[in-house]
Amino acid sequence: MKRRQILTNTAIGLTTGAILGACNQTTNNQANSTAQSSDLPNLKWRMVTSWPKSLDIIFGGAVMICDQVKEMSGGRFTIEPYAAGEIVPGLEVLDAVQNGTVECGHTASYYYIGKNPSLAFGTTMPFGLTAQQQNAWFEHGGGLETMHKLYSDFNIINFPAGNTGAQMGGWFKKQIKSVGDLQGLKMRIPGLGGKIMAQLGANVQVLPGGEIFLALDRGAIDAAEWVGPYDDLQLGLNKAASFYYYPGWWEPGATLELQVNLSQWQKLPREYQAMLKAAAAQANLTMLALYDGRNGEALQTLVSEGTQLMPFPVEIMQAAQKATSELYQEQGTQDATFGQIYQQWDQFRQQVRNWNSINELSFTSFVANG
Image (spheres, rainbow, N blue to C red):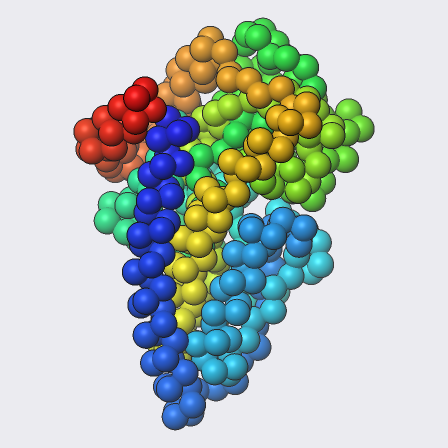
């Protein structure tokens, strides 16, 4: 599945990126012409993020949005991006946008499932959709409309603005051979994946990216997942733990998003709204292409430096999948909104998986075994 997804994501990243690039060039020219020939206002916004600047791809997605908006507006609409902790902590982006402390933010919706568990659908679901399938759900399966309705309760409108692709299972200080080895394990893992790991016996913690290395290195946690080889190497996680597991079944295609204060959004001229949408879409595709392009080389570096690459035991994968199914059923019973979204999302998941098993899995399986 991991190899299949990388091939799939690379294809859509290159093909759609080329198309979007041409469209964006036209949009840029039109926007520049509009901005220079109209009375569009001069606006200065601030964007808070959940990321440290050291992670050039993921923080770079936020920077890309800001740069694109500035270029398309002819410099009339500028947004200044801020790293986690510069204005608000990395896990308080939604609060800052909701309250109007800043106009917009770049984050992951599943950091905020304590406010509403259904927000997890905006980022990724355990054993859920790949990056390509996630984009299809947003654009064709009613996903974006669903998230807009959810976020309206927080005075926010959101747009997909980055995707990491299928993630790794994370770093462990000791080898994990069975579900029993998870008992009492202190692990950094957010979202519903964290809830499932807790059901399997782990002591789950949620930390922003910039705090993971020290916690793992000093023994405050025993294991941690972040994104994948490129970012994990940037954070130096291989220096704090030796065992690197895959796949990250809890994040098969994690979407990051642009959150905009809804009141501020409604005040924007429609031209500026279009610019923000286009910039977010560009970041969504470009980030995925960058991760697919760099993760392979980074993984080779990690292994050459002593990282022990290991698949999760089948026992753990099966237990996690069973616990995931039970969690979805339980959450749907307790929360009507979650249940409604899950039913629609699950129908789309089955449909797109059936199609992808024919058009992509058959091809990639043959190539892999050829």
